[in-house]
Length: 224
Length: 224
DNA sequence: AAAAGCTATATTGTTGACAATCGACTTTAT
DNA sequence: ATAAAGTCGATTGTCAACAATATAGCTTTT
Image 1 (cartoon, rainbow over the protein chains, first blue to last red):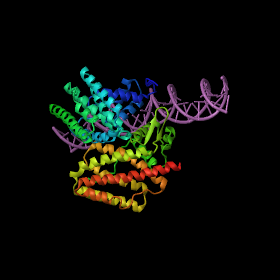
Image 2: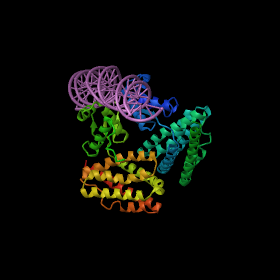
Image 3: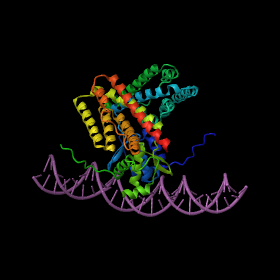
Image 4: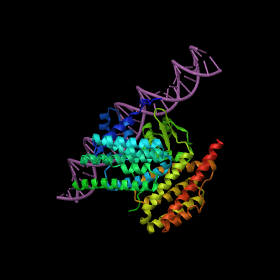
């Protein structure tokens, strides 16, 4: 059966959550700024009910923060959060690789290469937001292969925050995109037969990412 | 300043979420059963709006599952999920101990002992649901000490599911409560100076928990 | 008798109006 | 001039009615 064009009925709240998420990642709604329900509702052409549900969803994804009877804001960026995200990610991705290690097959290898190729395409095209998505897609394959539903859910939660930080980086500096060869050694290890080497590669990869993102935030906060 | 009696204004949705959660843990709403919004709303004496928000909250905690335009149910129990919960928990708690290891001080030790004492009190009193809460409180201390906000959030998510499984175990067998000495070696290691020994203790503790819970589910599914 | 189509009903999704609450500004008293 | 108290406007929380959807049961057809 050819993949049907996803005709499934979707609720307003879900669609608006997608739109809002995109707006936040695109920097159209800056970190720290407030969201007013009535304004957004009329802007999206829906009532406050579905909009509230969308907000709720983004709160759970860690993109918004809400205080009762007062308001909702996009989360502020902090170096502490960056360290937390990357340290947790190191732990989870190591765990994911251990689970996935014996499940790797020819299809895994092909898919991994395909996603790297897709990432490189986006780099060459210069589409920054697409780069971010595809780099996350590349890493997601390991989580998908691990065959661990709850782990996958936690990773999806982390992905949102990562995307926010990377997108902010891009907004500020114009370019934070990865280099074409940024995942070469990662793929080498992932396709090899040395699990400890893979774990070392993860640590290196994450430390690099964490330092880059932290430095960006430090500069930004000094300027402001 | 003496602790003020928590006079902070709370939203209906939040309070109802608490009530619903309690009902689920108490087994008043069995796993797999459906929740109908109108009935619950009138039962709690509120409108469907706040109730919907409460449902949403419990969905994010992994206690309910929803399919659009159709309905929401309490999650079904599965052995696969048990394995996932405990394996992820092993990973996270090991990570938490590594972070917390050098932050342990006299207060940490006292608090840990206090929480074990509280657990033993509940065991002696025979209050099963309270036992569950206090065993989770005991383990929570490590996550609180780790000084890692996101890790704490993920743990809180896992806690909900654990509570559901343990509560179901209790409902079925009348008694699943831990023995008085069930955490002795855990505390010994946690208060000692041998981190690898602590990690081994975590693995043992979790394997034991996982096997117990899995066996309960296996029996239950065979009977049904 | 089994399968396909239709209809009725229960349940969820959505809406616009109303009530409660908070933050900022103004006023007032010291 | 400053700080406490009060008022106003904006925003969120809540409600009850309405629309859209899916499931179950019946009818029809083969």
